[in-house]
Image (cartoon, rainbow, N blue to C red; front, side):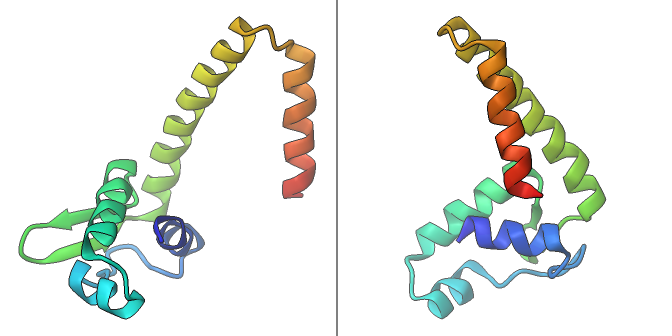
Length: 107
C-alpha cells in the first residue's frame, strides 16, 4: 500500500500538489481498514512524499524535493547500517560485493 503510493509519486504518476484520495475513500476502494491507510499516509508524510493539510486532504510533494530529502535520509540509514555491519565483523570487501550485486540487479 505505502510502497505503491511511494512508487506513484517517484514515477511522476502522481504529480506535485495532486490530491490523494481521502483515507476513507481509499480504504473503501481497497477494502482495507482505514487505520492501515492512515498509517501509510502518516509514514509517507514523515518520509516527505506527501503533505497533509488539515481539512483539505493529503497532497503529493514535488518530486525534486522528495528525491533530495529521501536520498539524504536513506544515506544516513545506510551509513548507520554499514557501521553496525562493520562492528559485527562484516568486511569492507563483502560490503563492496553486495553493493556491486545490487547495482547489477538495478541495471
